[in-house]
Length: 131
Ligand SMILES: [Zn+2]
Image (spheres, rainbow, N blue to C red):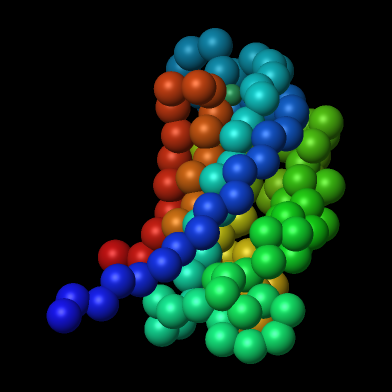
């Protein structure tokens, strides 16, 4: 029988301003986005936690929310991203950065970041995941 792997995703939104120096178009000017962030996690065996408070879960949604809020949302919400991030604030660079932060933070919990999507607009996103 084929085994299945269970993943869970939690979504967040935050508002931020940024501009892209040297951009050939209007993104060179300061402007804002309501970003949406989708964080998908999995346990390393694709199974669920089998005891304790998290039994039957990948991770408690409340715990995932607290980590993403502290590590990402609180640092970026209502900020000028160019002031708080040390790289060109494209969605691609941001999602790479967020994937790394969350991977480090979740390492001790046995939970792996499977995929992160950062929506810059309702129809445009960048995503980071393993090959
Ligand atoms: Zn923009």
